[in-house]
Structure formats: C-alpha cells, structure tokens
Amino acid sequence: MERKPNKRLLNHYSAWKYIVLTVTIIVMLFSALPTFYGENAAVQVGAKAGLTLTPVALRDKLQAEGVSVKRIDQKNGETLIVLDADNQQTLVKTLVSSMVTEPKELTLSLASAAPSWLQNLGFQPIKLGLDLRGGVQFLLDVDVDPVYQTQGEALVDSLRQFIREQKIRGASVYLDQTNQLNLTLPDNDARAAVRQMMKQSYPNWQLSNTDGAGLQIKLSQEEQTKLRNLTVQQNLQVMRSRIEELGITEALVQRQGDHRIRIELPGVQDPAAAKNVIGATASLAFFEVKESGSVNAMVLNDKSGKPIYVSRTPVLGGDHIVDARASLGEMGMAEVNINLDRIGGQKMSEFSRTNIGKPMATSYSEYSRDEQGKAKQTQEIISVATIQSQLGDRFRITGAGTYQEAQQLALLLRAGSMTAPVTIVEERTIGPTLGAENIENGFAALGLGMGITLLFMALWYRRLGWVANIALISNMVILFGLLALIPGAVLTLPGIAGLVLTVGMAVDTNVLIFERIKDKLKEGRSFALAIDTGFDSAFSTIFDANFTTMITAVVLYSIGNGPIQGFALTLGLGLLTSMFTGIFASRALINLVYGRDASRHVRV
Image 1 (cartoon, rainbow, N blue to C red):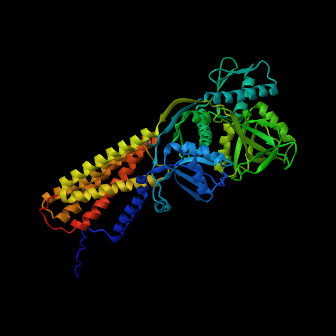
Image 2 (tube, rainbow, N blue to C red):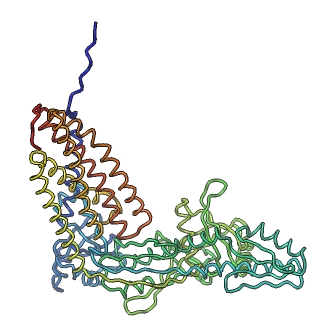
C-alpha cells in the first residue's frame, strides 16, 4: 500500500507558542510600567536607627519644618519617607538625624511612584545613570609606586638580617629610586648563598648579576601586575565602605584602566562632603584579648555588635603588614596569609611565644571628617583567632569564615597597611535639572524617531505595516521590561541613543522579511506560500546582521566603562528583542490573519 507523503502545514504555530508570546509581553509590560510612573526622592530609616515616632507623628514634625511629605511607609521595622520635592531630601535627613539614636542608619534613596499593587508584584523602575539623575562623579588615580617601595624596603630589612646571620662581611644593600635593590657582596660564595635564600623565600623577585659579585634585584613583571591589581582592588573596597558614610544606596564604584577608580554618586550635589569621606584614612592593629569584665582593658565591638575586651596597647599596628592574601588551607578551610616587615615580625614573635593557645584580635579603624571638618574615628574588631604556635614575620589567620569572607578580611588587612595614595584627577557635578532635561530630550528623540518609523511602515507596507508597528511597540515594551528586570542594568544618556538605534534595527528586520515576501509574490506564488518562504529565506540574513552587531556590543561592554557600557547594554538587548519580535511575534500575527490567504495578486 502506497503511503502518501505528509504535507507540511503552512504558517501554523502551536498554541503553546502563542501562550509564551502573550505571557512574555504581559510580564515585560508590568515590568516596564513603574519606569513611566517615575520616582520620588525619599529617606530610608533603618530598623536599627532607633526611631520611636509613629508615621503620623513623624509627618507632623516634618510638616512643621516646612517639608512636604507624600507618604510614609513602615515595614519590618524600617521607615521610608517619600517626599514631594527632590530638593528637600538632604534637609529631611538632617531633621530625622536628631530623632534617632543611630544616624548612620539613614540613607538617601528613591521610591517608585508606581501604584502599590504594581510594587507589590516586585517590579521596580529602571535605574538611571548619573547623567540622567544628576550627582557627583570622581575619577581617582591610585599611585602604586609606594606599594612597590614598601615591598623593596621589607626585602632590604630581610637581606640585612640574613647577611648578619650568615656573618657576611663587606656586604651592603640599598634601594634606588626605581625600587630596585642593589646588593654588593664580597665573593661568589656569598652571592650563591643570597641566591639560594631568595629562591626559597622570595621567588617573586628577579635576580641578575652585576660587576664583581654583586646582585641587582627587582620585582618580576608578573608580581608587579598582581600587586597593582591587589592594591586597586583594596582601594575599591575601601572606597565602597567609605561611600556608605554618605548614605547613597545606588553609588557606583568601579575600576577604570590599570590604576584608576571611577566613583559616581547619584543624587549628591555637594562634592565637598563626598571629598571628606573619600579622603578618609584607615588603620589596623592586633590586640591581646582580655577576659570579659577586665578593668585594665578597653571594649571594642565586633561586626555583630558583640563587645570584645582587649588590651589598651596593641601588639603591633597595620603599618608593619607588607602583604595579606586569602587562600585555602590543607583541610580546605579558608585562611589569610600575613607578611610582616622585620620589626613587626620580631614583635609578633615575642608576643606569640608567650601567648600560645590564647586569642588575638584584629581591629580595623577608620578616620573620617564630619560636616565641621573634624576628624572622627570608628573602630571595630574584624577577626578573633587563637594563636596555635609561635609566629614570625609570616603567619596565617584561620577562622575567617568562607573563602569570600577571607578575601574580604585580606582586603581590610591590606587597607590598613599598604600605602597607596589616591588623587582626584577629575571631578564633575551634574545638577538634577540637567539630568531631567537629558531625560526629556532623550525620550523626545526616541518618541519622534518611533513616530516617524510607525508612519512610514503603515504607509509603505499597508496591510503588513500594522504588523510591523505592533511588533515594534512590543519590542520597546520588552526592552524596557528587561532593563528594569536585569540586576545592575543602568540607563544612561548614551543608552537612550541605543534605544533610538534599536527602533531602526527592529524595523529593519521586518523590512527584510516584507521585501522577501514581495519578491515571492512577483514570482507568482500565493500570499500564504510567499509568507512562508519569505520568512525562511530572510532568517539567515537577519541572523548574520544581528550576530555581527552583537559582537560589537559585547566588545564595547567588555572594554568600555560608564556611558559606553550603557550604550552597549541597550544595543545588545535591543538586538535580542528585535529578533524576537521581528521574527517570532510578527510571524505569529501574520499567521493568524494572512496565513491562509491563497490569492496571488496582493499589494503589500
């Protein structure tokens, strides 16, 4: 019995594809809606701030000071004061500071103006960049030369101690201005002994012979790069913790280039206050732990607020730490390896020899300036470890928690020891009025470009033009929804330029498909068959064009920073959404309306 070949059903999508398309657009629409409602300036009062006033009493006090309050929300012990006027945010923070016991728990923030039912679904507005919101931007240069100098000075001390222990006469060592060590030795045997010591204890240094029996020692290029990266990373961590003093919830601190740091503080219009916090200094010290209630001791709190009794005089300060790096021990437990200079090693050795089995605390203190310019110190215990054996200039701290926590501790240790001066090389202030103007002009350009595009598609492609217009509107809805959903996504002014460019790319997908359909109709095929072959033949061209552009977007996002990344993000997401709506959504609509049209002379 002859089997009849299965005929492929033209222009047919399964029901699940329409369900996926509908659900996607609805979810993205809900995600995009809060952005169009905008945001209101707010002050957030943390649960530990100690605010005892009820929302009604708090509103009355603020209104008596001339503050216009939109609403006050309380949830899980936290209070959110939403304001009508953006310029009253700093005033409200100052007023509320006098009503709480912990002013540090107050932060400047922005609250969505969307209806409560939309916020309860978990949707938030798109985060805006500095150029759209206004604020202060700093570009900092990290000087890593003192770090190399510190490493060299520590090695000079170690070499001099080795020379004394080996009783090598006529030897000398000094550090020149290029951070290279020049070592003069009496004979080749002494040089061989130094080489052996350096190979065992300092493998990251390069040695080269000089005239006579001398040696020239310098850090390897790999180690210099590693130290530079660690130093910049340490400064990033310190800057992030310092900026918390400003109470900014959406501050951006990121590395730029080899040794620079870019800081963006949205909503901050006073660069002097930011400079006082960024320019603060930090230090670290090791203390002997005393029994609870000891009279001759001082009390320092740890990160959880638990009081720790320590001796009033530290064993040694963080200025003796040369390096600190996190690693995994033999049992897979996280630990922090500490390197001290010669003097610090002697102090630690003498202290640990008589305190084996006893705890030792590590404190981290930071000096900052208040609004009057006076220096103030905050100090806390970041680690308490038990001394297992006599320690020297190299030892490890265990019990630091996970590996990530150990890395954090290593950063804090280096923060108190490494000398890496930071200089502000660029400062820029963007007012909120200019930010609002950027938003207005940017979205006006987007609306104008989109309106002209919709009009052209409707007039030129007639019956298929409305399909392209629906796909274009769906594309923008999905794109705005994705920008609001993706963590860390920030919309900048160049990002709006990427949105405008996305409009053209999204329509370009439909133009390619519709032109292929017109070509197939000219060949005498039915409308249904022209649709089927038109979509299939245009797919490879559309994919190739979008894929090559996506490569550019990925490269821009990888090596760029700030505004460039904002443009690359919207460009890349726009490519994905335009392919989704231009191919999948457009095909779904055309299949429903024109997928069974067998006419051959159709104007499109």
